Image (cartoon, rainbow, N blue to C red; front, side, top):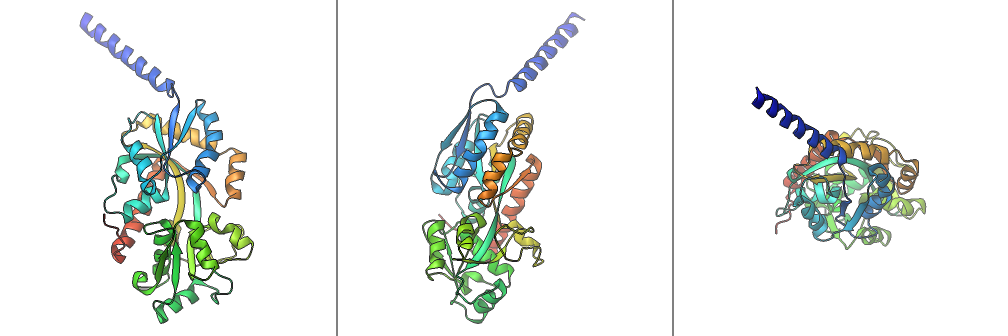
Length: 327
């Protein structure tokens, strides 16, 4: 009987200790890895949400830019971290759905991470120069099909979201093989890609609506389509719902937070609560919406499903068109 009592006492002590350990998280500052450079979309999003998020966490968040290899360097540093919630990642569409779909030798997969919340959606829009003569994607696609090799689209580089977006948009509108029928013009950065359409080097561009907002407002570029079901403020163009093309809704940018695979359930749930508080901050929402973002919080389960579904759509497209990057 003494052994039973002693065992019960030890079990109770372990339970109390474990409860205390959970209740005490976080006991120290949390390192938040931004896998892209200062001033970019991911960096701006991360640093904007860090203000209300720090209040929710009630502990310091150490923001660290670890750049390189299109987001892979910073992602790997979190992949290899202890899954205790003290090293977390600002994951992005480029690093966690485009890269895994496009790059054959990426040093990680989606299974190496646990997503605790996607909080920002960036609609993708396609645009042309106002003097291009094209008033719709249907007209643009008709030209591609009638005269292969005469229509081009610019991107921020081979393997980028813009590269994939241009090909996917043409494919969805009926171009059987956009890799052969349209010309891809890879450039260094989204700014250069937009400028290429402005100066006539490229026919069109598909990128985050936030990157095009000022050009559209100034009537330097004309939007032809937005991929969200809902209209995007300032973009007088058909939506995926208007066109009855729900698959286009998978073609969006996003930002979320992830930890290494093995992150405990309770820590993931805690992050979900913190993000709910941070994304309800009116000042944060106002700042992000002014940049063209849609603030929509997904819980850990919905986030994982959303990211995996987008990855499957992108991977299937890459496989069908032979767009995978080797080496």
